Image 1 (cartoon, rainbow, N blue to C red):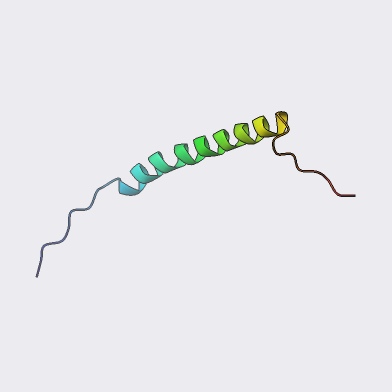
Image 2 (image 1 turned 90 degrees about the vertical axis):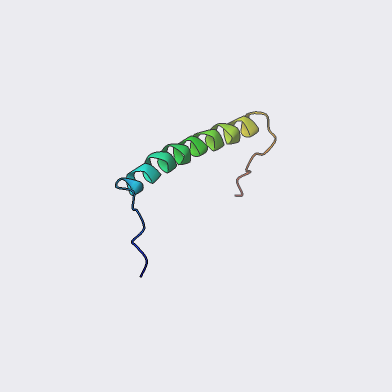
Length: 49
C-alpha cells in the first residue's frame, strides 16, 4: 500500500481566500464595463412596450 498523500491543513480556506476576491473583482469590472458601454450608446437595451 502507498502512504497517504499529504493534505494541506487550510486548503479550503486558501482556495476561498483566492477565489472570492477575484470573483468580486470580475463582477465589479463587468459592472463598470457595462455602464461604460451604455454611457457611450454602444450597447443599450431598449424596452419593448
